[in-house]
Length: 345
Ligand code: NAD
Image: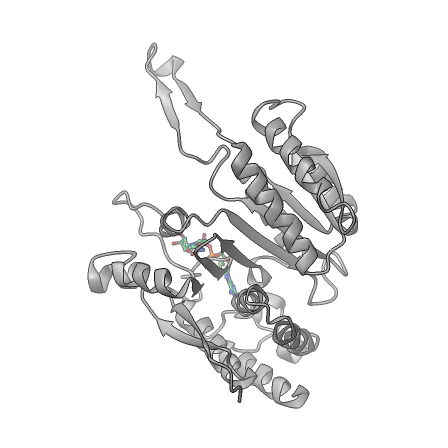
């Protein structure tokens, strides 16, 4: 219904429950008046079986062209030494920022009214992969080593991203999470840089800092004190699953991987082989990922509209899939959401 040019997006159905939840997203976006033109591409085990490659060049070329992708979950084949497709995508497109919002939708969970966002540095830190065994002594005395690398430029880039994100999304506070009391160089550099960046936003965004262990405790005791959290790779990885746990787990958790040339949006959960093909999958996380993509393109109104419709459907027990204690099927959930969108339009 829009006269504006549609924005090309690479759409990757993925493995397991991927195609079922992607189907709901496609139908729901049709009902919304889709601003996106989907360019369907393959990746994952289905692509490996068809083309001999987990991440075909045509898929990479498509993302290179569109600069935007919505990605269903991909199974990692067991054995065979395959490198994770997610890591390859992150490195190929230098997706330095991982954004993981957590917001309470279904009432009656462990916490009410959670609304926070974790921004994690995705390319540096202790996950750069310089790991090795030190060849001294025998197996009983084995020694393993890992190197962490944080740079001024990388710390500045992720901090700027977090503060800009806070401004764009009407957030009020950024908490810098670190372990600078012990890892004085590695995370001290990050803390110092993030604080410098924060000073440039002082008239708009408040900031503070927390040591990661204290932050983990505070997230359990009083998660409402947080708004946007920014952290290094390893700490961010751990805390992002913790905040997903605050709001009902993986079926509700979207994520975005953002770089200068491309941004890839996904559900945080995997391909859920145990329920694939049974019509039981909850498509909410992928829908929320698509809402993040709307926001990324500045379409805040449509993102809010979609979220309100999701809240409204999940607010009733009849709208909930099995993982949320209901018995609604994946496609029925899609139907209910489309009806709600039409009511609200
Ligand atoms: P998983 O997230 O696929 O499943 C964990 C549990 O959560 C399962 O019981 C599953 O049924 C349930 N679940 C997950 N998503 C759900 C949804 N939307 N609705 C309802 N229930 C849901 O994790 P796993 O079993 O450890 O991994 C399965 C496969 O997915 C593996 O091959 C793994 O490598 C891959 N994986 C991919 C990604 C990704 O592509 N981003 C992330 C994690 C795991």
